[in-house]
Each structure stands twice: as C-alpha cells, then as structure tokens.
Amino acid sequence: MELQNYIAKNGIPLEIEKGKQVFAQGELCDYVYLVKSGLLKAFYITADGKETIKSFIQAGTIIGSLNAAHCKVPSTFSLEALSRCELVQVPFNELLALSKKSISISQEFIQILLSLSLKKERREYELLTLSATERFETLCKDQPELVKKLTQNDIAKYLGITPVALSRIKHK
Amino acid sequence: MELQNYIAKNGIPLEIEKGKQVFAQGELCDYVYLVKSGLLKAFYITADGKETIKSFIQAGTIIGSLNAAHCKVPSTFSLEALSRCELVQVPFNELLALSKKSISISQEFIQILLSLSLKKERREYELLTLSATERFETLCKDQPELVKKLTQNDIAKYLGITPVALSRIKHK
DNA sequence: GTGGGGCATTAACCTATGTTAAAAATCACA
DNA sequence: TGTGATTTTTAACATAGGTTAATGCCCCAC
Image (cartoon, rainbow over all chains, first blue to last red; front, side, top):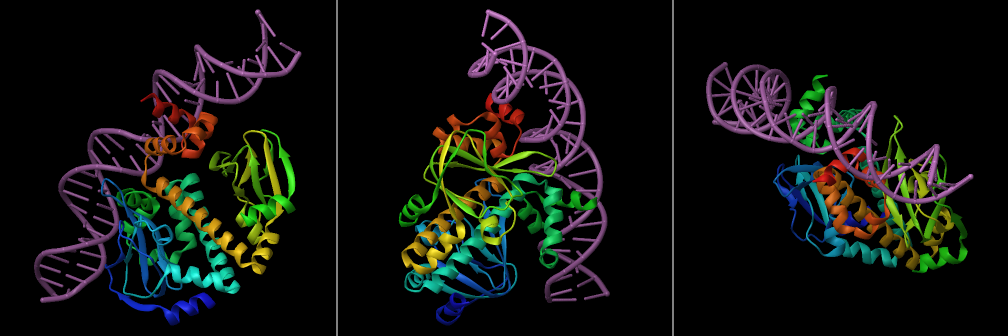
C-alpha cells in the first residue's frame, strides 16, 4: 500500500482513450503505471505482423515493461487501452531508489515481484500443458467478468490461437 | 552475492544422485536451493500422466518452488537431478526474514526476482509466438552447451512437443 | 561377448489448428 | 431506423504436431 500511495501522490496522472497506446513495442519506456480505472492489453507484434496478447491489465495493478525500465532497452511489447483508462505514471528508477531507502517499500516490492512471478509461472504452465480448449475453459472459469468485457478476437490472441479456432471451440 | 554467501555458509549441503528428486510435485517444500554443481530439471506431470519441462537449472542458480515456499501450498512441479548435483538448502522464510533486516539483502532479492520475471517473460513470449521449430532453433542458438548435455526426450518436453516431433524437426 | 533397457528414428495415420474467404450477426451512430 | 463497419460464424482445404508401433542403435551390467 505504501508503494501505491507513493505512486498515487507523486506520479503524473494520465488519461488514455480507448484504443490509444501508453507505450509501443520498440520504444524505451522508463515508467511504471498504476491503473486507477479501465482495462488494458499488453501485446506483442511478431516478425510476420501477428498480434499475440501477453496479458490484460485491470484496475489496481501496477504495470510497466520491466525489461525496458530496468535494462534500458526497447520494450518488447505495447500497452493499449481497451477502454478509457486513468493511469498514474512514475519513473521505475524512482521506485527502485525509494526501495533502497525503505525496508517496507523493499518488502512491498518483493511481494509484488513474487506475485508477478507466480502469475507468469501459471501462464507458462497453461501454455505448456493445456490445449487451447482447456486454456479457454480455465480462463472462463477463473475470470468470467473479464471474459465478458473482451472481444473474441482478443481472447483468441491471448490464448495463442486464431479467432476462427476460438469460434470453433465455442461451438462445442 | 551477500545472499549467496549467506546460503553457502548457513545452508545444509546436499548431494543428489543423477535421477533422484529434490522434491516432488504435490509435496510441501519450504526450501530454496543454491546449485553449486550439476544440472537439474523442473517439470510438471499433467493429469493424463505426461511430463513437460518447465526449466533446466544450472550451477550458480537459486531454485525452489516459490509457490510452495511462499504460499504454503504443495509444489506444482518436481525437481530432479540430470547429473550428480551439489546443492545447499535453506528455508525460504529464513531468507525472507533476513531481507526484512537488511536493505542490501532486500535489494539482491529484488534483483533476483526481477531477472526471474524477465526469464519467465521471455519463455512466455516464445511459447506464445514461436512455432516448435523456431523454439528449437532459439534454444540451440542461445544455449548450445546446455543442448549438448540433454537427451532429445528432455529437449522435446521442454519445447512442449513429443520426442517424435522433435526428431522430425531435426530431420530438416 | 550377450542380452536388456532406454533412446532415437521412421512411417502411417489422425486431429487440432491455421488460412482464406464468404456469409451472417451485431454494433455504432447519423 | 437504416447503413456501414466490425465482429463472429461457417466452410473447405492445408499443415504441424500427436499417436502408435516397429526398427535400429547404443550403452552398460553381467
């Protein structure tokens, strides 16, 4: 909470319209964003121009390209608003510096990174061991409210299949 | 380094013979392990009895089931030695407690978790956007020494395909 | 050296998903 | 309410990878 409070107080508020990008794949982006309201998607555009969705980001989450912010390299993904969003922006380094001065902030950082790792581990597990149908069922069971807000196109891109394949799966 | 030194000094040394498991999927495991030598694999057994490999763990790495250690739930994967291994075992909570008292340990923890997240992100990216052939090529390019030490069986299980499919891919 | 066990290859056939294209449904809004 | 735009469905065909099983290979214990 301390960390979120810090961001809420010291960060720069941003409004992002539906369909607009917060940052784009290939750009440097040293910021981290706290999502106050709205829904976003983080996605890759592959070499052959196809989009695959890495994750959906809901209110209350902190999001940023760790890679870009931490390693000073271009982001590997884009972040785009699926609905009008209120964000608060703060430089990643500022948070890291803050964590060097406060044990409680450090601890919160550690908790956030731990839960991030667990989330990614879960996704890795699903991609590695479940079929597209099973991944779809899991998503519907775990996040029914989220699924309602998404287009089938975006769900498919998140599952790693085409919209056509998802339509087929639903048909059963 | 401070963290690794702590583990090396205060942990319990373990020797694991090739083929033996450090912990098994479904068990509680509150420990974290520093790999001093050898090679291990972390893998899942799915509901229908198939094995898929989550990652290979080489010397110098710290490994453990974050989920099991942090959330007090059974591990979702098993850890098995692919060659004779020297490990050092330390309770995860001990490290977490330590990080609450020392900023520098906290910072190291954060760095480890950051690089873990980046690694997982990369894997997620590959599973989501690359074909089996491309994943195999990437692995061969990025970790040629590792590939040499592995059986084709294990490589296939890591790529998320069957050994038969991998043999076909290599044929080309 | 012999025999057994696991690993790798090959082949034949099967299934899930991709691709393309067209039709149908839904939505957005003038 | 009508109309164009977008999303979803359906169909036909192509391809990657799964499954099973047979064969050969290699290593190692005896």
